[in-house]
Amino acid sequence: MLTRRTTLGLMAAAAPVAFLATRASASEPEIFQSDGLAIGGADPVAYFDLAEDADPVIGSADHTLDWSGATWQFASAENRAAFEANPSAYAPAYGGYCAYAAARGTVASTVPEAWSVVDGRLFLNYSIRIRRRWLRELPEAITLGDENWPGLVG
Image (cartoon, rainbow, N blue to C red):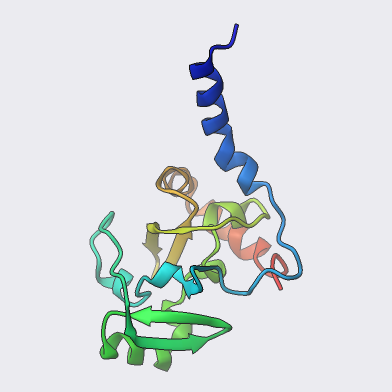
């Protein structure tokens, strides 16, 4: 017999998996945006200087850049200039969509706090829990994500 507690626990455990099983529509933007901002306003350049599991650095409306159909925020003019000079070096893989989902041929939203820099690339995940799963599957997860990504959105 299922109790309310068991049912809620099962629903919570299944929620990320069910969400990850979505396919992008043709209308999905190339860059995932939250509140109209890439990475929810976190500074993409700052991730490369953070210690593992540190909180992301939130950018400022004083330092923004429109790139690839999204508005990006930066903590400083220097970080904005670095990104503008070489956006592909700092922009998150898979357009900022979940790396775990991309490895499975699907798309999912991300949160700025679930991040990893692996081999000089920024990856974002749907949640901290999903990030832990994705990290356990490296490097195969990156190989699969790279293979699957073209064509998942746009």
